[in-house]
Length: 116
Image (cartoon, rainbow, N blue to C red; front, side, top):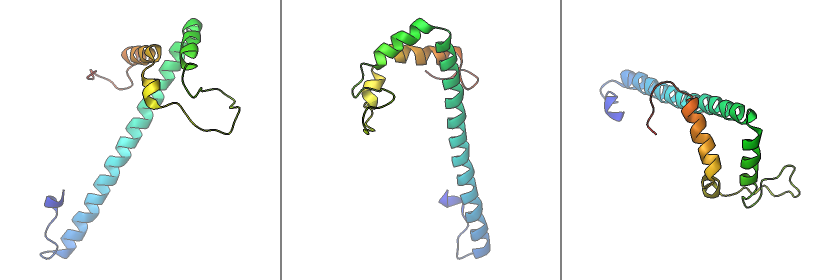
């Protein structure tokens, strides 16, 4: 992006204007990325919970699988500990992986064919 700016010494006013526009472009891009991630996550989770709500037996199986995590995820917590299971151990839960993958297959949060 720096190559797109006019030389500061040649035209300080044009440089300041281009720099301001560049900063605005970056801010807009960051906002777009944050918004896109927020909305797609919300849509995906909504469909996941909807699918789970239709299958109580699957909910029970998933609950059993998640209770095997260490430290256990139990609510309400018996202590003040805020420790959560490592992400790697959550990723290694086959039923959770299958449910998330199938939900995304059935209800993609964004239109079109996406690489898997």
